[in-house]
Length: 244
Ligand code: ADP
Ligand code: MG
Image (cartoon, rainbow, N blue to C red; front, side, top):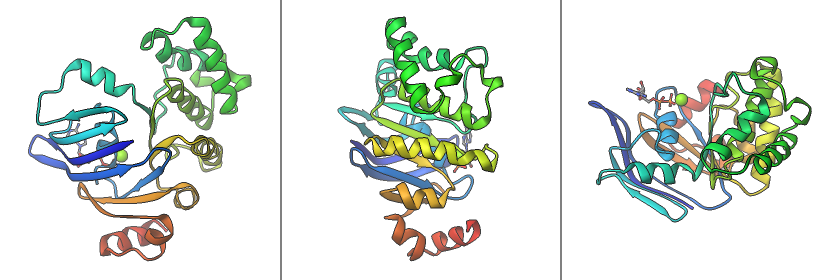
């Protein structure tokens, strides 16, 4: 489903991602952990071409981009439809209701007719427990509710892969659970997911594979049972001690 080969990303002279190689099968849940500045967000942004990698190759489903060549606008548009992104700060349109936020992508990008996308958006909002809040604006919703709308909005594009960048780290502690619960449901339905998070208990329960990043490298990867209990690398051990 996803194949990342020799991916690197520079910001000027700063090399933020270094020779990233990763293969993810359909339906798998990958959790990415690592210290601040290790390149986690940049990796997710490279996966939907919000950042264009400097070198390497990226394959999702049947679309391949080779970054040693110039990437065209058409390639970017088409590739971006493969992934849905959920951001730390929700990024909802403030002047649109929950329903309008979820309908926006399908109507403007996919040219879906309004009635169809409205019906789908209502179903998705019901799925994330927001059926009674479809006409609310973001400012009328709690952080947890806004993030659940954010998840519904990403799902509305029917992506092949869902990308989550610290989706609960801006939330008050009592609101974290409701968002993780929705993410678990999405995982159970067979969605391929790459999740940057510090929620280790969630990672233990949901991840098929945990990846530890540091300094732009994938330092270590493995199943959560192994990584969290008997990490091989010194850097992984140190990081886990700090956050536990
Ligand atoms: P993480 O999400 O793991 O905290 P990031 O991917 O956000 O890490 O950042 C990795 C490194 O790349 C950091 O040193 C950060 O300052 C740098 N960086 C991220 N985005 C940019 C940018 N647009 N321009 C320049 N440097 C950036
Ligand atoms: Mg980040």
